[in-house]
Length: 106
Image (spheres, rainbow, N blue to C red):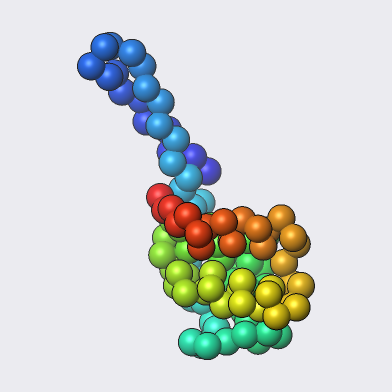
């Protein structure tokens, strides 16, 4: 979901800002992996989180918007990818890797 805000700049031009917002019924699920999880344990935790929320890469989106998933998880995921685990599609792994080198948040 996007939160759209409109305002006028100093030249009276309309500016639209759209910010991603997590659409949840209630609180975000608790991320169930312990510190230092990797490999299959980390994959299972990611899959459980995504299933609880209802869409793939929910853990990444919630890491950026809700802070319900620790930022350190991105490092662990990329460490797994570089070690040969392929539980993320290549394009998703690239998104996480890009975020590590140029972090952003909402």
